[in-house]
Image (cartoon, rainbow, N blue to C red; front, side, top):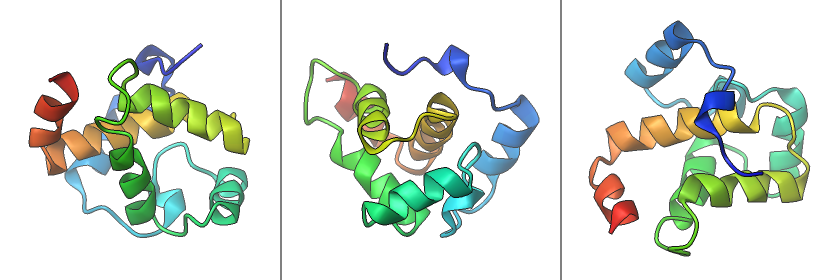
Length: 109
């Protein structure tokens, strides 16, 4: 089992609002990321959405056999985030595609 955008529980309006807005530092500003997941991320040294986006970007190009989304999914799983993994990853992935459109080209090469 890996990342599956079809299992994302984010509704279109919430995703659109998130994608159109500025990226906020607060972890719980990410759709699907609640207090329990925030605590697990804090334990891993991730204190802001900017750091979490950096973690996602660190998976780009690292392993051509797996997408960054899959790598993030398994990292979330390894640190104990089980709730809304697909939703969080979907939101991050979509936001990154807007903020850094050239990253999609790098991922697909």
